[in-house]
Amino acid sequence: MSLLNILTLPDSRLKTVAEPITEINDEIKQLAADMLETMYAAPGIGLAATQVDRHIQLVVIDVSEEKNQPLVMLNPEVIEQAGIQNHEEGCLSVPGIYAKVKRADQVVVSYLDTEGQQQELSATGLLAVCIQHEIDHLKGIVFLDHLSVLKRKLALKKLAKVAVDA
Ligand code: NI
Image 1: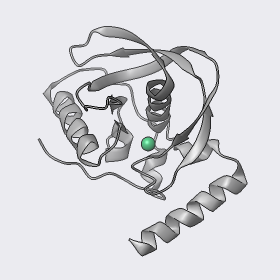
Image 2: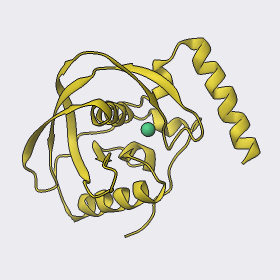
Image 3: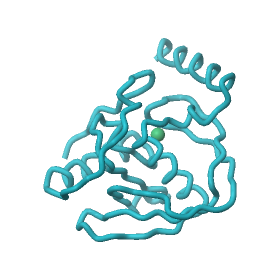
Image 4: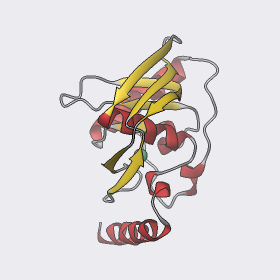
């Protein structure tokens, strides 16, 4: 296993749209394992392949307190959604910046697991937020893109300052 480098804004590679996974091989399984290790070490609750400069539809998530409920989703897609929530989000690719983002409160996500089995998961609250946030990454979208122009500008200014201070 190995820790992967996480791309951060304003790296334009974060805007890359990820390709669907057509074959699950050892390389994909190794990438998923490395992404989980990288996410736990960061620490974070979700990581998309886009963030480690691999442009395939793969995300890993663990929102549990004990960090013992890893989820690996290949080709994830929200197939149902309902309600609205306004949750404060952060992102390993946007270090030090947090902002409230309006998203669906409940989602049903369809995906393949690492054995190639089709799965469906119903999620609410933080898990629903995380799923939507990670699927956005696969489309080249970061959470700041959901903010108003003014709020996004302020956040990017702060990000630049955080980077200088670090
Ligand atoms: Ni993120």
